[in-house]
Length: 443
Image (cartoon, rainbow, N blue to C red; front, top):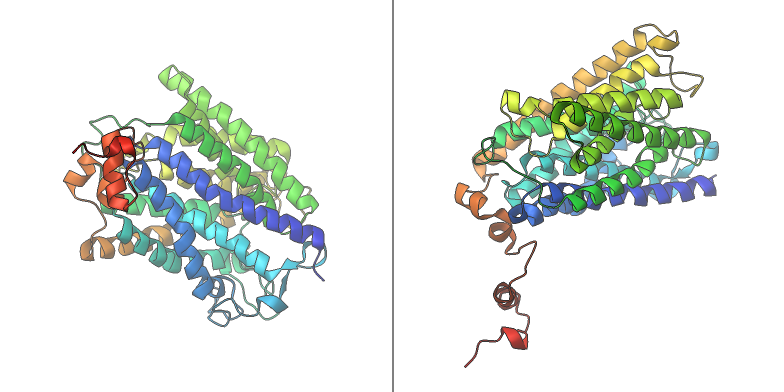
């Protein structure tokens, strides 16, 4: 029997996670220069379309299907999202329609690949990027989602789930591996294949719209309640625990990042506050249902401080991760996964395990480390291969001249900010719209 309260919560959580992708578009769009803001937002927004098609065609089946190949990936028995009308995920107070769960997981796939766009901001061609999105979701995200999120017998009685969740028994409540470490490792590979921006790091690249950044960060934080608490699959006490941890970790990380900025640079910044919030939310993602409130604060403080320091790694090692996907999502996910092996407590969630500080020894910490290394290595290698093939065949990066003049006009024939009547008239002629009286040329 479907629990109506839990079903209603999952419908709401799905909407919250969907909102994170437009929020990410604002967050990323504000951090680039005016000549690339539309391309940046489009490379994020298009993931809503591409991944949705992949998911219904075969993605859902491969990630959560009833057939399996040794816990590595599902089969094609549920391709086209067959059997959704007759299936229920979970039991008791967490019994929800399979279709709702499938859409909830779709939003995870969308936001994960959208994160990668930040690593190659201002220098990517739109259609090759769109192809990359489809291939990457198929070869990287879907297998890792199966490893982490597919639980034995959850979707169907005979379904065999992924090896990280069901064989290794590493803890990851909402995607510290499949979403965060995956996106961080993949972003590093993608940035290395595409190469640095023209003039980087010599020429300063400043965010063009910090209010966009703060608004985007706020929408991401808002959506993260659905991301983490929704992973409880019901309106339960576990969902409440996840929500509390999410809020506290985000709060702690904002303060930690700003303190690091003050000590290092002499000023706290709005960009730092927004980045700190995201870092804390990343760090708590795998741990949100397994730690006490003080544990959530500790993870938030650690993620905020460590990620703020990790931002400078790209300058030291020369990889142009434009919007710090590696430092925030990769490093933040790593912090959260490993600290979970230290701070997890069965008093908070009996379905979890006791970490090092709660008498569990090093066993759980070791499992967490194995999951981290496996996901990091697979994501980096396969992403590098995908990006290299696309770059060498159809080309992934725009021409140098286009990069200097602005990728928005070259790729989309649009500008993010159009204040000139002359430019407005040119745009109207391109789209076929009638010219306003003041735009018509005199005879």
